[in-house]
Image (tube, rainbow, N blue to C red; front, side):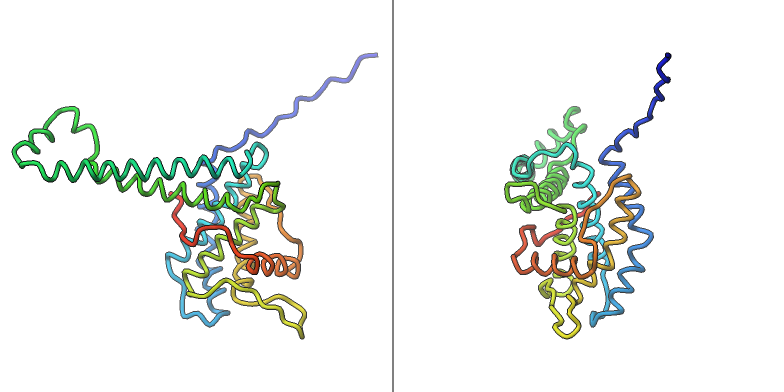
Length: 248
């Protein structure tokens, strides 16, 4: 008896990180302003800001980027160490370039112009411009290093949702000047507040963003469970940096 022919199953090629980030940003940009305006209208806040929208976008993109890396991810303690090394190296390089720029600025103009006219020098950016780029790189690496601080040694459950909550908390606090807190309504027996409402507003968009790059985000299945999760996380203190930087 002949064995049945095996059908070749076409496996999807994993998307590259830059494609994931770009698709996620595109998915967010169309819907986010209306969602934020809806959330602001339900609060006592006077208005949103472009910086707040950028910070919320950053939180979504970072959580999905971490999700895409999950199957092959190193321990977060290792990733944190690697990112910290990049952060410090970029920062030190920026300082060195500023020292170089200062030395060039202090040269007698005749000899400074002579150096600037050197053919090989024209192939490089002015040191202070490169220093700004290195500052941005250092800040970007710091954002990830702080994000990886949520790891306490083991394999955290729903890590990407936790990072999303952390990023939204940073954005909320920068916009409002208030701590990202959740309150327990004893009479209604539910968790509530402006911050938990923000998470509930943004979560479907984050989920849609993950779906757009063929990923699946895990999070508590009910508003009550999510409220309790956020309540416990905000009470325990947050590991991520209070400063957000943009994904470019």
